[in-house]
Length: 313
Image 1 (cartoon, one colour):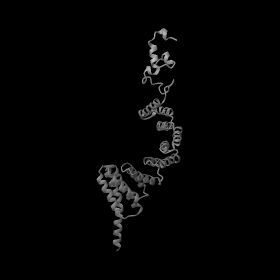
Image 2: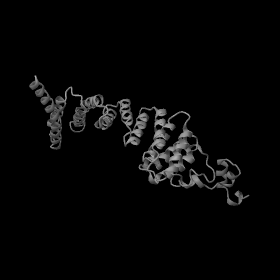
Image 3: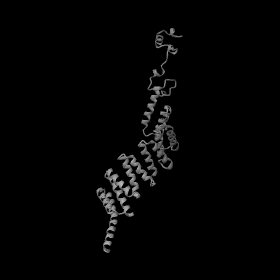
Image 4: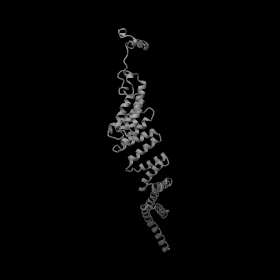
């Protein structure tokens, strides 16, 4: 009996020692781009650790599952199988160091490959519960996903949380811009959106989002019946906007509407620099004396055919 007990202990010890060896061989196979061989070694690791529940076994199991899931996701282009293995990782080793990044990779797959936005949000929030160093970025990503879901109210709350909780983060201006966008999509919140965009411009005058904020402010002004104010903001955005052609088209569209609805008066701002659009005879045609006192076109024509001494007053 004593020898049988020692033999069983030896077998268990060998199995535990085999796990790191299989993991090492898996890493070597990955380096050599022998992905099928690496996958086989990860599976052998899991087989060796079957029914083992020691902390060391849990650590090795998490490494094997994470390695296999990453392999499916990034080398074998099998997102469905990757999701399955990532889910197994989060279920059997939720507190392992490897699981945190595994959750983030799982969230990205659910978002981009399967369009499961709420599933992605759940994984990001589970990762955030562990207070990772990239919390600001993950929190902003959650806000973006709510915007994509068109849940603008929740998006506004999440974006505001980023701006308040991570006020020294480089994601604050992004969060302010996203919050302003969400507010502008909500009924009756345009003025709140305007305040947020103005706050962004005041706090981050050098932000790459400045021209975009100016465009959004212009849209709010245009919707509120202030097309001239909108054009002024869009003109400010032109020099640094990444797609100035789109801004120019918006300016041209609103100027066209102004021309169509504004009566011609002296000093008409909508036509001040449009000489190429309006011929001279339309802009400054001289009136005859008959026209000047309100005469008809026929009377003016008759006046033009009269001798000069008769036409003079």
